[in-house]
Length: 71
Image 1 (cartoon, rainbow, N blue to C red):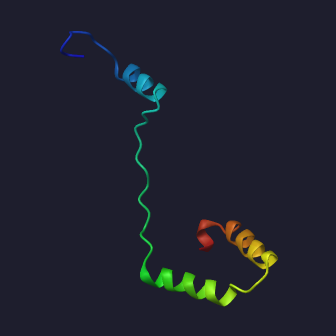
Image 2 (cartoon, rainbow, N blue to C red):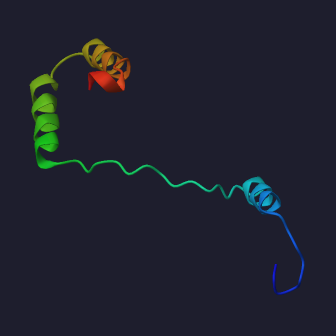
Protein backbone atom coordinates (compact mmCIF):
# COMPACT_ATOMS: atom_id res chain seq x y z
CA UNK A 1 0.00 0.00 0.00
CA UNK A 2 2.96 2.29 -0.61
CA UNK A 3 1.13 4.12 -3.41
CA UNK A 4 -1.55 5.41 -1.06
CA UNK A 5 0.72 5.92 1.94
CA UNK A 6 -1.26 3.48 4.09
CA UNK A 7 0.72 1.19 6.39
CA UNK A 8 -0.56 -2.36 6.68
CA UNK A 9 1.11 -5.14 8.64
CA UNK A 10 2.13 -8.40 7.03
CA UNK A 11 -0.18 -10.38 9.31
CA UNK A 12 -3.17 -8.30 8.18
CA UNK A 13 -2.38 -8.96 4.54
CA UNK A 14 -1.96 -12.69 5.17
CA UNK A 15 -5.20 -12.87 7.17
CA UNK A 16 -7.22 -11.13 4.44
CA UNK A 17 -5.72 -13.29 1.69
CA UNK A 18 -6.43 -16.44 3.71
CA UNK A 19 -10.01 -15.33 4.29
CA UNK A 20 -10.43 -15.14 0.50
CA UNK A 21 -9.01 -18.67 0.03
CA UNK A 22 -5.62 -17.48 -1.22
CA UNK A 23 -3.24 -19.61 0.79
CA UNK A 24 0.51 -19.28 0.55
CA UNK A 25 1.20 -22.90 -0.31
CA UNK A 26 1.90 -24.86 -3.45
CA UNK A 27 1.00 -28.44 -4.24
CA UNK A 28 3.62 -31.13 -3.77
CA UNK A 29 5.07 -32.42 -7.02
CA UNK A 30 4.33 -36.07 -7.64
CA UNK A 31 6.41 -38.33 -9.86
CA UNK A 32 5.02 -39.05 -13.29
CA UNK A 33 3.63 -42.45 -14.17
CA UNK A 34 6.47 -44.25 -15.92
CA UNK A 35 6.27 -46.94 -18.60
CA UNK A 36 7.03 -49.82 -16.23
CA UNK A 37 4.20 -48.61 -13.94
CA UNK A 38 1.80 -48.64 -16.90
CA UNK A 39 2.93 -52.14 -17.90
CA UNK A 40 2.46 -53.42 -14.35
CA UNK A 41 -1.07 -51.97 -14.22
CA UNK A 42 -1.92 -53.49 -17.59
CA UNK A 43 -0.56 -56.88 -16.49
CA UNK A 44 -2.59 -56.78 -13.28
CA UNK A 45 -5.76 -55.76 -15.15
CA UNK A 46 -5.43 -58.53 -17.73
CA UNK A 47 -4.46 -61.15 -15.14
CA UNK A 48 -7.32 -60.34 -12.78
CA UNK A 49 -9.96 -58.96 -15.14
CA UNK A 50 -12.11 -62.08 -14.91
CA UNK A 51 -12.25 -62.13 -11.09
CA UNK A 52 -15.48 -61.37 -9.27
CA UNK A 53 -16.39 -58.16 -7.46
CA UNK A 54 -15.35 -59.36 -3.99
CA UNK A 55 -11.79 -59.97 -5.18
CA UNK A 56 -11.50 -56.41 -6.53
CA UNK A 57 -13.04 -55.00 -3.36
CA UNK A 58 -10.48 -56.87 -1.23
CA UNK A 59 -7.59 -55.71 -3.41
CA UNK A 60 -8.75 -52.09 -3.15
CA UNK A 61 -9.23 -52.44 0.59
CA UNK A 62 -5.74 -53.88 1.06
CA UNK A 63 -4.17 -51.17 -1.10
CA UNK A 64 -5.90 -48.41 0.86
CA UNK A 65 -4.66 -49.84 4.18
CA UNK A 66 -1.06 -49.73 3.03
CA UNK A 67 1.06 -47.07 4.70
CA UNK A 68 3.50 -44.92 2.67
CA UNK A 69 6.45 -46.87 4.12
CA UNK A 70 5.03 -50.14 2.75
CA UNK A 71 4.67 -49.02 -0.87
